[in-house]
Image (cartoon, rainbow over all chains, first blue to last red):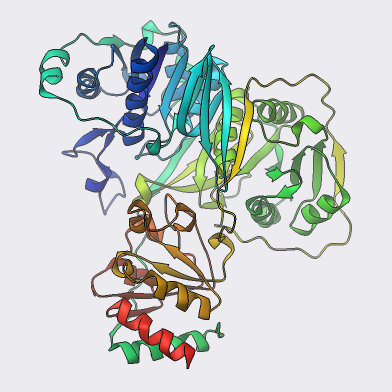
Length: 261
Length: 330
């Protein structure tokens, strides 16, 4: 089973700071991590490989600092890693990013492409499905577990709001996975030393069959008009009350608002 | 394809064998408000795939559709990402809508990106606000990123349809006064539709599922009341409300994901939201700050939940709930 995993290096969001003047993200000095849902995808790929054999190839698009992330994934046990990095890629929206990723994937043969549900910086959940469309293969989003893989068919469970579906998905296909699909393992020191220096593939715009008109800011159908912090609403006076007073205040308040009880 | 001659706003009607998902009605209503604000009004067009009935026609009309385009094939009654992508993309090809709104449900967020890739247009994910971009027909769509720490307003200036998935619960579904039924048109698509994806089993998650998204009153539990959830339920019941919770209790396995409010859970907008022992990180408030009225109870007077509260009480939620229970029973 040959597996491609799509991964993204993201800022560690709990550390996110916004420039209060400009509303822009302060990226300087912000630690980065592998997007958590993508790490789930990597772990799922490792488990599938353990059961069914094969090869795992991770792809990421990003600045050259993303190499560190790929080295960590080597230490986790993937077989090959490719960084897509070019100034011309900068500012790509999900359409352009998917177009670039799919162009790189087209040169390889895979049974399954695994992507995390969404990245914690953009929260769009769009790149996986868009890559599938560009590759002209079926996809299932929000996969909560892979049941098995037989005769080229991947059996998956998909989480919807009010129901759980079991689906047969003939490969080649793409899935996007929820964090409950697999729990990332701990890396061991031995693998970190032995594997993290494996060679990385690096591709630029020239290596791919993409037109400059379809990538980067220029090739992105969506544009960011502005970014802002949600302005904090005006603070309401807080009251410190004993439980009895508090309960009475709440009931009076509800009654004044139209009464619910 | 880059079209520039788009008009009208398409709304994808998400349904399960004829039962319409509430978010689609919310989008019809919002689209109607938007189209009315245009200098030269455009139509809200409901897009329906599958068996169509008079009852459905009436509902779509009530919530704001000016026109309905249907593709009435039995093999479209059940959602399938491959089949629905094909038919919707063919419709877009035929009609060139200016914009297309799709509910940000699991289905919608699986389907919309695929369509946007096929027809080559921009898609804004999980939007929480839609405005017109100045005097133009273009939409300016606002969405949270970084788990709600940052908001971005997105435009799609050179492609149509300008697509967006919209989070359920952000807009209110309202019925409109109307004089005549919206016109209906059939989109004839006769080619065979194939999907390699096969549904093997469907399992309803919760037989008595609470639907907090539609609740009028919500008593919501956070870490501060994790040891007295019976009390929370009891107070909610006395107030004819539903129980919800913050992510902390869901991750802790104490509450069901179905009850979770916030960025990764439901967006709710009840008349009254009572936050008990919830600190109120943006990931939580993003899902409830549109409630009409918010009461917050927390021991920490600096808890951010007080920033969105209409009534803030600094105190022990458990003790206060106990008093509430007592007074409600009296």
